[in-house]
Length: 438
Image (cartoon, rainbow, N blue to C red; front, side):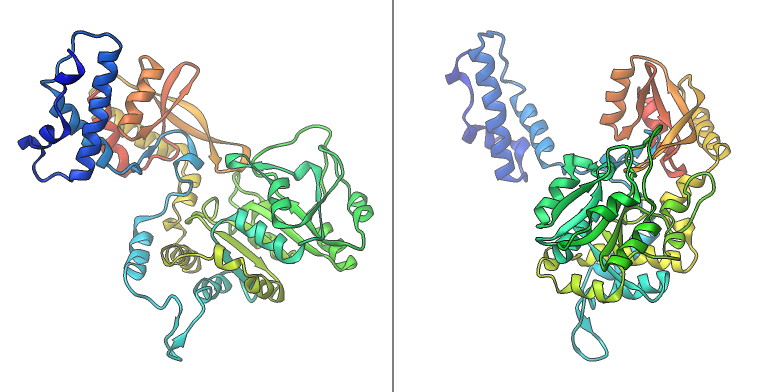
């Protein structure tokens, strides 16, 4: 076969199989498949068949026109899986939010006065009901919170931080680079494994503006190491006239026995609050991606006045979902905070889900005890008891097979596992269908 034997795009477009299809996408699909044919001919292949070209174009058309963002079943054993979107949000909360923000709403409209309002008021009102009479502000993620705080209070001034807390967060974003980009002057103290209160005291100078503490939520230190508690840094900052800022990364409302301790419990920390603290809303808080800042009211007001705040502000959908999550906490409906629900399930419930899958499936399957993790840069060394279904066969091929059907498992010790830690009853049918079609 030669190049001249390949049908033209115009000729292909006249095929009755392509009736009612988007012409622009169809042309793109035609060009892609024609280029593939040309490459095959160029490589010297003589066995080229154009009879199924329209079918290949239709397949390509479907591939191009299908949205890339897809719903997945998380059978990895990691609850807050960053690559899978972190916190899973309750459908009822989402419905309430969509009903509110799907059309017009009072995002920036004061109904009482009949004039322009403040979009930050809605979350401020809800968060203050949750945390008390304190300054609050929400931005589009915790990295934005960090950047905004540094740019507002430490531009061209020193921000003091322990060397042991200069972390790298997801996507290779390094804290020192974020600090530098904000305009703040990074001043490192202590060593990688040990930082003492005297290190901070000795570092404070005339150009010092704030002391930053970063929670080591995405790594763990053992052995010959020590750090300074935020309470000591808050006291020191107050004595020296500096701002103390605690970047929690991830935080929960309160402690959860055997899972979440006082170090990231907001109820515990806010008993003696730092000047400012921030955390991600889509981690242990269990909501949508956002960065929540809590602190002194006068400092929050200054953050709002910063011109870059407009770049970090939330849209109406995010505000609506986050407000519904906060209101669920206020009403005591923590059963609708899916992350908390998943983290607190016992192995008995996980076995119930696993056995239900095994009972309904035609495949020969068995369960094993295993461990999962919180994930999302949270409690990096905390193992959670879990249960997994072992699917026998080539683990790499099985991993691929289930991926293509929207189910993400994991390979452990050469076996392909479907971990039940983040799987819900609603997903049983989907898993059974994938197993039976294997």
